[in-house]
Amino acid sequence: MNNNMLVIAAHPDDAEFTSGGSLARWISEGWNVSLIICTDGGKGSQNSEDDPAMVSKTRQAEQEASARVLGIHEVIWLGHPDGQLAQVAIRLEEQLTHLIRKYRPDRLLAWDGWKPYQLHPDHRTAGQAAMDAILSAGIPHFYAEQFQQTPGLQPHRVGEVYLFGTDEPDKWVDITSTFDRKMESIACHRSQVASLRDLAIQMSHCNQERGVNHGYAYAEAFKVLHPFCDT
Figure 1 (tube, rainbow, N blue to C red):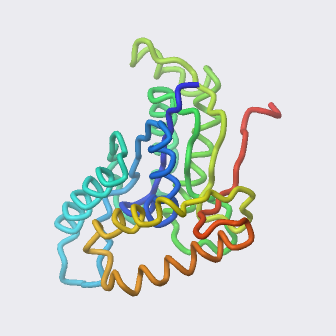
Figure 2: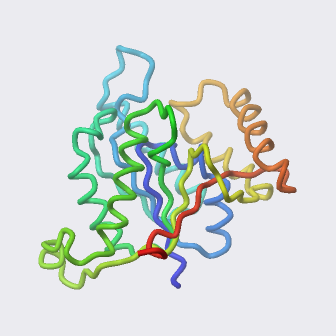
């Protein structure tokens, strides 16, 4: 086991809000984390006069800064139009398959694409494409042309998957020692955070509620899968 971790998020800031404390903890424990952002984040503004291209540029810079705070090794930008992932779902699965084979993660984090009443279509699509790509990446006959296009590329089976934004968690990660680092990383997303004080109170209550029944001051919750155990 090489302690490689791959995070697949739909937008800049997804990973920090859902998993920032866990990522900070795991990185401190020696995990090497790479982060994939599927969209360009260009619709992340409530102001109709904002230029989506400039919004995208701002959010990319914010995400890179946030990644440095957490200690994330690399941010990989796929650049699909914000809000339109469903239109490129097959292409997204192919891209994620290649990246899983390239980065060979022992653990992968992604949105729970099957959360009931999930509002954002990009979250659903990113989560479902991630799970489809996990299967594809481990079987050599899926996207077999990738092996000719990239010499040395090999199939890869992901050992464990942590789904964030889930309604059915079965794993709670103690982020008591890294909650402040999580908030520091979120603060980098200035264009998305109108009042950091109010947000800090909200996040504090949310992470306290997740930790209270498990003996932690603060926690983040995940649904954990071992996708190839039963195949």
